[in-house]
Amino acid sequence: MGTRFELVLVAQGVRDTPVHLRAVGELAIQEIEEWHRRLTRFSADSWVSHVNRTAATEAALLDEELWALMRDAMAVWQESGGAFDVTRGRGRDMVLDATTRTLRFRRAGPALDLGAIGKGHALDCAAACLRHHGVTRAFLQGGTSSGMALGYDPGRRPWRVHVDGDVLELMDAAFSVSDDGSQPEAPGGRHIDDPRPDSAGTHRLRPTRRVVVTGPSARLADAWSTALVVLGTVPSTFPSGYDARFLRSDP
Image (cartoon, rainbow, N blue to C red; front, side, top):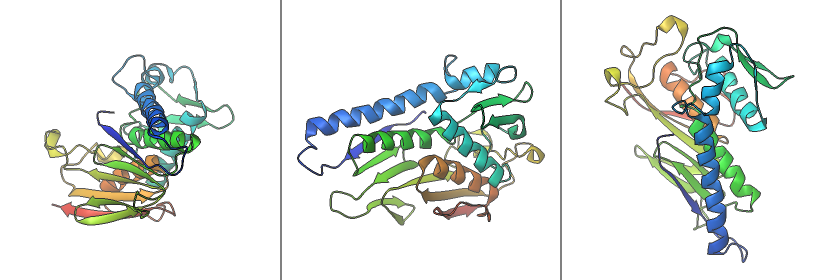
């Protein structure tokens, strides 16, 4: 996923010895590494690469976690009017079948790119791993743009995240920051294209935007922060239980 993940685990009782917390933390890191292997498009043996090679001719069967990921990706594509699209503008060609729990492409050409939702998904799965093993107070961070807070911090307060002078106070919530100008080496100094078919992948005429989204799911926060950079406004379809702030909009 091209980023560094860090975990802070807080002891709560006699069971939470350093040895126990370290072991559970290592399991959570293994979960993140496994999702990197499955979701990267840069490795020929990843799940994403397999789908991109075969889904136009053979439906791909999804396990429970992949189904939840792709269902959310499709929902944000629909609710954002295509501003978020894991097929880079070919969302109409992706079909999810709830009966068979499969994914297929209507024709050759589409390809999955889960870069704008995969990191959040890995954080959600790592958080679920921690909870499964009894850890309910922790902070998980993927780079400087995504994170998940479980419970309260060591001082028994909400976890505090500083973003552009704002302070996010989080308990059992995720955050995601998307910034169209954060990679100046990208073409035109922007790295988030508008994937909607009538936009022709444009970004150069759009203001540079920086958005933070908070809410229960890290993968939905990731997806919506990307969509809002493209949209420039919060649509009526934005999910309840989530919050969005535009931190900057430069010409």
